[in-house]
Image 1 (cartoon, helix red, strand yellow):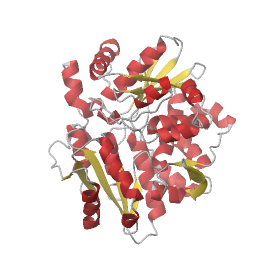
Image 2 (cartoon, rainbow, N blue to C red):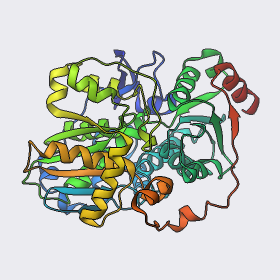
Image 3 (cartoon, one colour):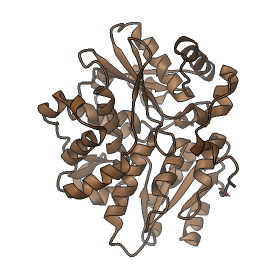
Image 4 (cartoon, helix red, strand yellow):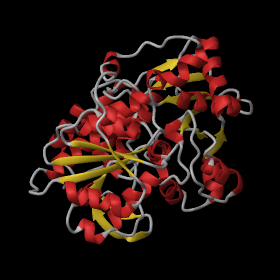
Amino acid sequence: MQLYSTKNSKALVSFKEAVLKGLPDDNGLFMPEFIPVLSKDFLNNLSQYSFKDVALEISGTLLKESIPEQDLEKIIGDAINFPAPVVALDFNFHVLELFHGPSLAFKDFGARFMARTMSYFNKDEDQDLIILVATSGDTGGAVAAGFYNTPGIKVVILYPSGKVSHLQEKQLTTLGNNISALEIQGTFDDCQALVKKAFLDKSLTNKLRLSSANSINIARLIPQAFYYFEAYKQVDQSRDIVFAVPSGNFGNLTAGLLAKKMGLNIAHFIAATNVNKIVPHYLETGHYEPKPSISTISNAMDVGNPSNFARMLDIYSSTWNNMKESISGFSYNDQETKEGIVEVFEKYNYIIDPHGAVAYLAFKDYLHNHPESLGIILETAHPAKFLDVVEPVLNKTIDIPERLANLAHKEKQATLLNTNYQTFKNWLIDNY
């Protein structure tokens, strides 16, 4: 497998180089030179395969010759060791629960696969690999759990001060060891800008080996395609299957587009956002207009300039008409999101988190004109991670999973920094 930059299709690199570098030198994003279509036999018999078998078939087809089969099988076996069940609410509404991993968020799939892949590629290096990751919520906890105690790898997590939930902050600031947290006095976009600038700073990259664990890294994106196949095999495949995806940096939806390109018969995608509706606006008008992000109760989607939009454009050859035929965009404010949480509970006795509620509302609106569609709503995090939102809205106490409850009394360890790049750069040099 070779990959190119979304800004230069002729500059090819290996999968190993793409994973360890994270970003191309031109600040584009890595994309596979060729996206293979899976065999009809495999696609027609999905229900006969286990989740691990599905993941191995997809990754093996994509990464042919990049990682030997026996090593890839070990990576998959260790990374994809928890389920992704689909819960049917009624004839139309289905929920894909992606919160059964260690950090109770969908990003466990990508983080665990990436950690093991990076460790495999890094095993013969003398110098530590420094992973930089910006988070608006769940990425930090998933990456911290995925990379914790991984030999030869240090992780630096940047998160916006006061803009992640209490338990999310605990997940990324209490592990210690090879995990460091930087509390940035700004937004997620500020955190992401610092990370990107570091990758493009030759004076820094000549001293430190840097890589990324955000969805800008291709190793995060590939495993997120696994659960689209896993969800598809659990529902009635004779119907038009539509995925409603809560979207922030748009890695999750891009992974779905990758699954479709590989042959999965997905009828349509819904890009569901909060008031940070950059992509829905593009789908409606054809104009991409990044803006400073706005804080909401669905904080993981508080992104004003989604990185993976470059990959979406690449997949559709920058053709607006093609993209809007495959993807519909919807956005909702906080009050509407709260009403969605209440409606799901009252109608189905199901507790959904704020991000899943946004996707629920989007599919509900899509359903008006497509009443026979089978909707799969991606529930990207356990509602217990958003107690401050969900409990008051439902006037109900939410059961907290033990691995989350155990964090409550752990001491936060984070360094407070401003958004000045030189300050961030100095911290990296001083500490590594």
